[in-house]
Length: 357
Length: 120
Image (tube, chains in turn cyan, blue):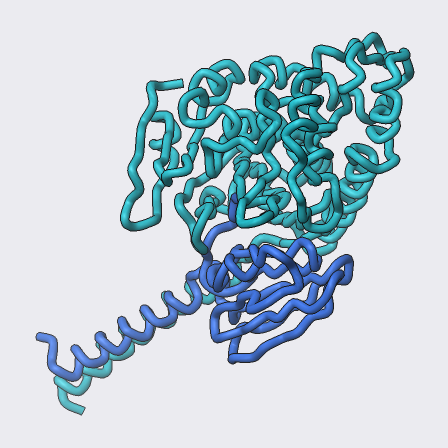
């Protein structure tokens, strides 16, 4: 063997050794890179996706089964038009007498009342009758027809609000016979908060609970943040993306979530309590907040507020991140939200940046 | 002095290592899969490897799912608004959609990472 051949073999062996070291490192890294443990449950009238990071499958299964039972209980207890605990309250409120309310619902009612006040009544869980009148209290897809203008005006005139309800301990009464409580736009967020509490109590600190597109994320996806996409209100795909590491909720209210068409006109489920009709100035509102219940209520209130009023209502509710898409497709955001979001659609929409919140 | 043969070996090693990186460094080196759930039934996992069409019996009728290599979608479903169909193809891991009236949901679970969750 001459020197040249020897050098060639030495170099080949060196490269092969390096390759083997690097290759084995990669294989090892891949084996160490598990995906989140995922499960989904059908409760609360929606699909709830649960992603857990860093749990073994047995513990993950136990957590998901626990959440499924919890969400099932919440769905029955807080259901607006069936005979659970809230259903009983709704059957007693219009009678005007004092009664004992179930403690399983009282905390939600108290918190919803505070949020309703902060939103200047734009988030108003007391308009059960209006939502029912529009035909949205149904387990199947609503079909209309829309109610008469007279029926809507008659209910708006009675001006039901959460402040019509007086609560002392567990005793409750309403001074307005038009008041019944619909916790849609709040209960899902409240339930997500409880689910996150439950996961933490089970030692799970890295998770996403995504209830029909509204989610709270805690911790991280291993060494990187959780990566969230915000779906476009009109077309398949994502309009923006953001990262979450720590503990934040992302909630969106949109006119595409629940609606019906009647004689060529579209009627969606987010009713403006001031007019009695579906709110008309927004397509969707996305809110980021640390608490899911607040994010849920704020997304509803800011949708009703529309492009002209969202800023003042967000400030009153203590919300720091908002994106509102109006009916022309223009995106309204506060500067902090602009820093958080990466818009992913082309061409870029018209964007209006508000003063800081 | 590096000869042409040395160069070929080094290049082959680099390309091979790069290929390994692409295959294995991603968060899911396994083939792309999706979880399909119908009502309260346990979810079933399907591999997104070849074109096929699945018809599932849901709460109020059939949901038709279409699979192509690396992606899955609702092609049709027994609902009024077809929100599930309008969601289009799901590709990256974590992408999901559902036909709520028919109680059928799908979620991509393997393959290259997309979003961990979709807000809507």
